[in-house]
Length: 495
Image (cartoon, rainbow, N blue to C red):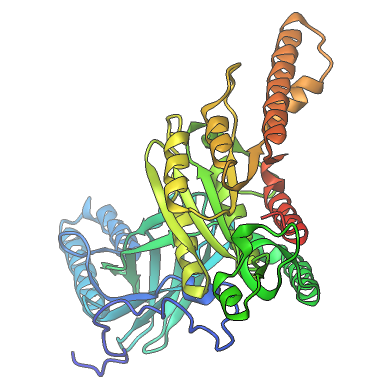
């Protein structure tokens, strides 16, 4: 049987949207465009699934069951057995005719279409579109192969496909893990209205989808953009002079000016000493240093979330949110994520391409079951960043009475950089420490929690006295705390 195929030409590969938006002519940093992060749509023609790719439908067995009625008269007349065999033969003929009418390999076209980027804890719609080219409508039972990290239960649904008319069904995914996840093919069971036969088909729609940190978090904090822009406009009206490296103007030498500020070439031309004036740079380097060791593997369950998330997931979301504000403010931002070894390193830069690179790097950061090598991160950062910059170090403190290694690394960085030391607090520990014990076991737990809280407070005070800015905050409040501290640093010109 021949027919004109209603399908578009089969694509040679996945159709991928442009990876990066074009840079604006003004050169200002632009927010990350979610459309560039949407997974590409994939499509394929169907192939037979299983050895035969066909089976008997439910009505075929019902038809055979009705034929058993012939067994009653057969007790008295054996000729009725021949009638039963003819009835069964008629069922097989119906099955063969029905099977011939069903779409076979290459007769159906299946596509998986994403409507938005895959982001952590954000519900996203995925559409499955099926088109068939036979002359009659068919019933399609469809199941998509989706990993548990995207959806706890694999999606399965039923579609009625008219000839040449695409049939579409959507389902939701809510990722509970970042990184690259692999989706498999789509499996179909096709029946006609007669229901005597069915075909088993499959479409190879394998694809890798990257799950990013929570993109909605950045949108919920857009008011910080307005505050940042207002702060920047105020700084444009007030020209700050200080010990920055950005040249501002020349003037005659005054008693008390430092010799390093004297411009000797201008002094030689004028025959008198001339001093350079510098202004504090408006474009600073900001490094986000993320600890991916065992302490960040602790899980936190929040209301409205499909599953408990690691502390590292909250750190990645806060880092992505902070990158929006930093780039919008005109600063350069970099990333250093580490465990026992360096996982991700993105040097400070600006622009939409750089913002996309940060999002990709944050999506791929994985927690490790071992203590992170904090001194390795410190040494790497000191080699990579020679000029003074802002270091935002997101970590947690171990349960030890000695000075943690991460504090040693932070103190070494403070000799050259401004360090914002961010510790993710333990809400359950605070609750246990504040509760009134009613039994000896609860008393011991309460005392242990209070001792742990006291050690954390002492460590934070030690860093503060050394010159670091310190923040201890719950995971769910991490992003607002980071944004507020960063804007405060900008307004006070601390870097």
